[in-house]
Amino acid sequence: MDQVKYRLPKRKDGQKTFDHIIDTAKKLFSKNGYQATSINEIIDKAGIATGTFYLYFDDKFALYSYLLAKYRKSIRKAISEGIHDAHTRYEKERLGLRSFLKFAWQDPLAYRIIWESMFADKELFREYYETFSHDYVRQLNAAVGHGEVRDDVDLETLSYMLMGISNFVGLQVLFRETLTDLDLDRITDNVMKVLKSGMFNEK
Image (tube, rainbow, N blue to C red):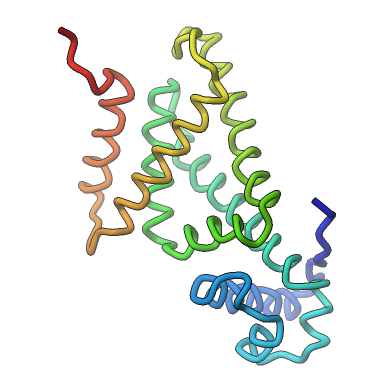
């Protein structure tokens, strides 16, 4: 994938304009999709001059790439803060999952932006999840070394399994009309019960 071109603002007034462009683009990408959203539409909805857009972004792809990177950073931050007091891998998985589900509930546009990247640029989509997987494998490998995770499974596969669970249980959360802290705990604990003990009864 070619290096994307965007330039971060250096002044507070520029940051305000930059954030407004990002917020406008996020809503349009979520509503219309990446391909159907034009730069002119973003400029018009944001109420900015054409030159202002190109001051920060070379093209639409650069803006989208920044937005995806921002989501990756925000999700990592939410999970990192959520597991701050966790000591075991089990606790980190539980609190990390709960933090992700809460993030998804609070920012329902996240799914559309992230999954839309598959259609915007396949390499961008793959890089997004591979980056998460590589970091996950590193953490799981440490847990294996501590005897917390079994050592007879492929950790890359395990990382994608865990990400898959988070993503699709996240959809369960998004499909709800309401979500309380008790709901979050119940859903998270159900997932952890299966992770810990499995789904099949022993005969």
